[in-house]
Length: 144
Image (cartoon, rainbow, N blue to C red):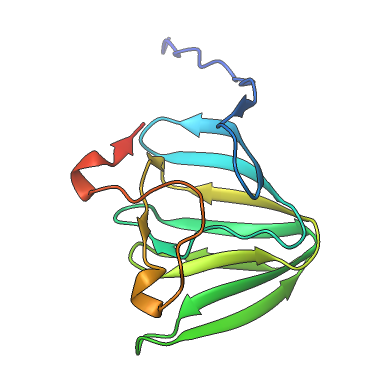
């Protein structure tokens, strides 16, 4: 007879990740060193920082709202794409991006669990940096 290891199903508690100028960010699930699943709520007219990530690979699904994603098109110029509920996006490490809520938005985000990983780049594009979380060095990135 083969002995089978019993693996338990988990039901993690939702964890608020702190105050955000643009809305709220809640961690739904953390699979250590594999994946984090979050729900982001961005208030109409609010935006995140123009940034890129050293290591974090993220994707999102817009559950509700209308979202503008500003991004560098590869030649040092910013472009924008507007997406509506039901659309997905992928932001690989190094991709410059910013999310702007054209209406109240709810996003499900799945990403590698690299926390504290951002490099703000507003100045590079002649934009004054908005309030919010500051840049981190690659060595400061936390893999949970």
